[in-house]
Length: 171
Image 1 (cartoon, rainbow, N blue to C red):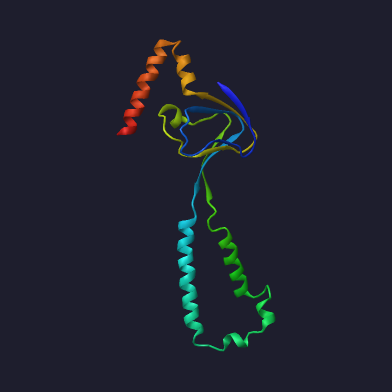
Image 2: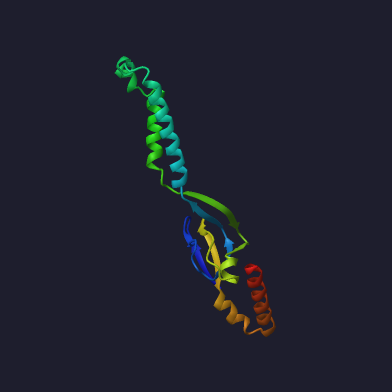
């Protein structure tokens, strides 16, 4: 077993990484998360905004002199809800492609994580990062097997469990 002290936000592994470590949280908290790309959501919102703008343009064509009747001081006022809405849309546009974090689970003191990569040798389904200052213990699969070789009954039992796990995953 190896140990590491992680600071808040420190990433232990990345999504899709092939890593055969099993982790144990000695003290602290770890978050398992993924990123959601907001571009699809933003595209649907942009279509909706475009549709609303076209509807508003069609309505304003009935009042061609309307723009000339607006007091310029009122346009620049922070109290003008139309201007405020435009500023909100501009602000949203700045962050349109920013991904969103989706938390899948919080791993607390005394719990394990990373079993899929360790036992089934699957790529990581999530990212793992320390939420607080965390004391993490981990073991590589090869090191674990080397220790098991000193205990033949356990070693062969682990082989059978590995085969059963792989068989169940392929069904």
